[in-house]
Image 1 (tube, one colour):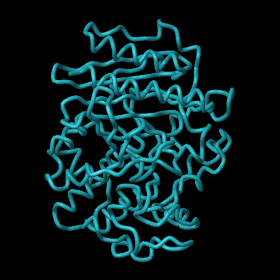
Image 2 (cartoon, one colour):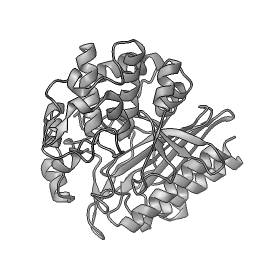
Image 3 (cartoon, rainbow, N blue to C red):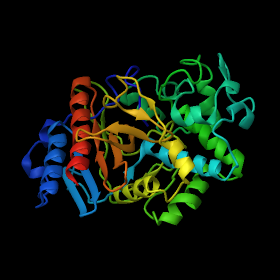
Image 4 (cartoon, rainbow, N blue to C red):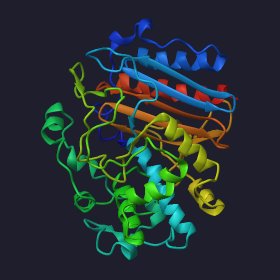
Length: 391
């Protein structure tokens, strides 16, 4: 899940924990220059207040890993190596890949409208599925409202504990979004909306007769041997080992263990998958390397539109179909997607040639927007440095 900062500026970003800045919390540095740099940046993210950090970088010269902080705040055990993660909105890249495979098989067109595929589903309050294409859904140019603010209207621990076991069907989530007017006319601007990918999952099932989860397993996970990646839906528990996630809901408030997810969101095609950094790197490398999509569909995925400033992305970021393109400080850019929910942030990125790939997980989020901004900058720096230094 990625939240628009304009609506939740304080309650959905990474948690500050000053007590974790002790050097003793870090893993031993890798002896190489790249390994030292990755460990240094992981420690910097920890020092910005993140409870636990894990990094896995794949390069032509081998794999570099780094861990910093603690695996949970009670036992203060180490962050596990290649532990299980909630992938959050990184799920969207898997879903977009399946949609584009169907396009390559001539079973679907990016220019078909939502109304043609799901009659009557997108309507009300000025929303009109006749104006929105599959491409608009995958690229967040649909203008559809984001249902997230309906299922979590008050950013508080009370709401989290009261409603975290409730689950919605995709149809119910879309119905909640349809209560609100469009953000803009379809195709005219960009705004991130999880509703887009709930609809994409519904379209996959309509076209194939099988759920998006079944298609992801059949088309991606099994062929690539991603045995530690799953589509658990509303099942709330992560396999072990994993790092505990912590959310701070109010400034100077307590750290809340949110390892059990908030099921009203992140339970469908917009953000429900789990996996490991090893598997996620393998997926991105295969995707960008052309193993999952034909050239025309991969080119369509990599055709981008600008992302406006103040959307939580580095300056110059552009959005393709389930993949973001972000500039690198050393020139060029990287492709990838992030995911976040209560208490965690995941970033997965690969150079445009697929030769260097990194996944970073940060296992807490703060209420204070200034702390969140520092942590966000530290995370972006880690990814940028890892991909620039790994050559």
